[in-house]
Length: 393
Ligand SMILES: *Cc1c(COP(=O)(O)O)cnc(C)c1O
Image (cartoon, rainbow, N blue to C red; front, side, top):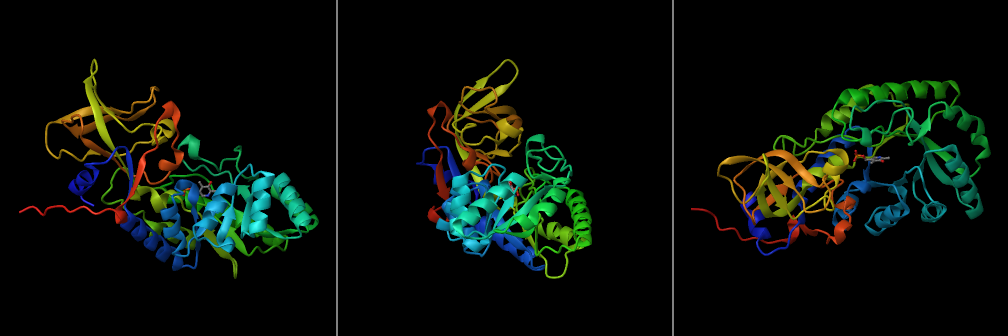
């Protein structure tokens, strides 16, 4: 949609609004599915990135599976068209209730993050008279060179099993009568844009596979998680992430054994660019040296800047021209970290202007809170609105 269409769409609406470009979402998905499909790879959408029903349905209707991190996500996946056999369930702290629910449902696999979890799942499966498919999540000790708060694959990290503990699992696996060991799982971090990181992961997995082969073990599946990054700066060229290079990196570097199925769990790369947070300017004010723009969106709508120091591109949709000014764009919440951008250049901006905060489809709306008793942002989907824009000329 063009800027003026968005502005027109916002005319009689309360802000902030989470706007989703459903055509872009479909394009992105189709590209990802086609790229992965060339090599026969399976995708499971990491639904923690955005669990809006319409987005989930867009995924499930295309045959993508779901990667869940809570029992409620498993439930939502089922309600939105994902088949139990296409659902994987990760997380370091699954509750008994969540495990039981997933076993009743008959999901494809649990991604297990400790030996104790394997024991408990085995025990519960035995009590229920079922078998549980599991992947062992290993911690490959790889630095994803990404933000500290989103790196997950270093040696001492709460996620996964340290490499050394795979041996303990191998010794004990014959005791786990109600467990079907389907494969290994890895997820080393998020917003990774350097393909070398994934090459390193592949090399590491190749070594582990050699070790397993020495013990006569051939696993039917491997799951390399998600983490593919997006371009938060260059929105035109980076509208759709380079899925081709990503999947090709695995194709060239990972030695799959005969019949082995490779799985991926992309989250951000599928949904981030489809979301725009739209907000109105409440006030402008001069500080001692800075110019502030106070908008009606806040960290309760988009936590990423406050939590990760994330930088989202911001534009003033209401004004294309006017003197460029350097602004600090901040929200109304009573926290110093409620700031979206410290040095953003916008045309001279005024009260009532509509600002767009881009690339907010992933880890945006789903991290909302009601802090300061704030209302949640409205949700608008591009395919549910009609705007009659008069063609100029
Ligand atoms: C968060 C997460 C993902 C998705 O990560 P993205 O960076 O959004 O692709 C995939 N797998 C697991 C286990 C995760 O925790």
